[in-house]
Image (cartoon, rainbow, N blue to C red; front, side, top):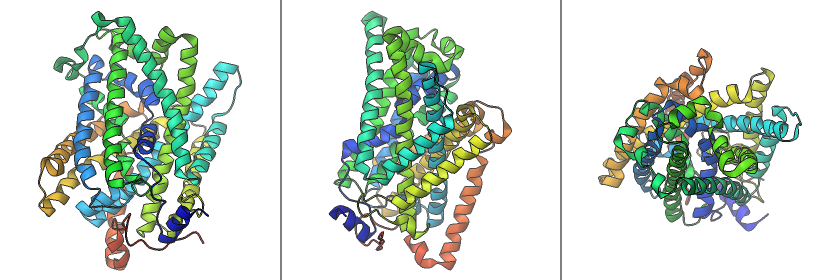
Length: 488
């Protein structure tokens, strides 16, 4: 047993001081799956959104996320809980709302994890068949993916951080190379800034573009989940939050702009609409040849695996935080005596993901068209709801404390209003996110209504029947009085 892991197990907390700013940024960026966003989401926005105005739209959304972050990071000294959204809402509004947020958060993250595992399994199977002529079932790759992320999640968090860093650097490196080649080809005279003009941004389809733009940025908010394992968290977490937003924003704005330049602002929408799924691979083929195209396909698989691993770590720590606060069985809060990880939570999550994917497999449903489209949209809407609620709750917290400044009240309030509008647009255009007209899939967001109601009922029941547990909701501190929970 390592000293750090032993101390963590004895005090019922995760191992302290393992992650620096860079480690957390890599884990957050991996969850965002930049390769998957560039190859899958941005072409859809170019085709069905505001076309050439997508880079400017992405820039606006990045600004909104920075406004949100200004209030978000200011909560860190006051709410020292790894539950992030759940704890912030519990402190700002009330504990019943915090429990409802926990229900939504866990469900949204599980949907996101299952969706990227389905996509990874599909593309891994397709890559092996197209590249080597070997046909394999996608279920095999899904099972391997679950097993590997569970193993990495079970072990010390630094190992997962290293894996994510390597995968992220490879995919970002290829995309940056493609961007440089596109800019080199168009030259200084060929640069067009039409994408950032009001006429292009506010063109028809802006609503759809906003949905895709914010979905591409979702994930940065998970920085607070790692605050217990961070070094000097009051500095590390804000830096990681701002750093993740700025890096993601720069990456998406630059790369989407380069895609527009590669075709032309006038023709990008029509070209993308022909075959959104092959837009990026086609442009890569033109500039990097067959090797570049094959590398893109391979790195799409590793990008999706990295995203699955990132989401897995997020959910496991949510389970841990909720268990420590008494909302889930105490066993889920057990810390591994060697690795310092919430290993029981990791094992449970592996079973849950295996069950979800197994149900889709037994039903004979397509991993990409059924599993990924339905659950990724579900996860995105759930996280949008949490972002909007948290952003609107933060000002309430600081107003009660009499701390009314731009960063504590006006910035998160503005972001919350905008994110709420985008969430409404997402729900109104949900079929555009799923890509299907199936009523059963497009009705899935109704589940969040029942989850919120169940969470409010659970919180109210705890207030009346178990006041000691109710008092703990969102209140367990990263430092200080932690309930003793060990693996022994």
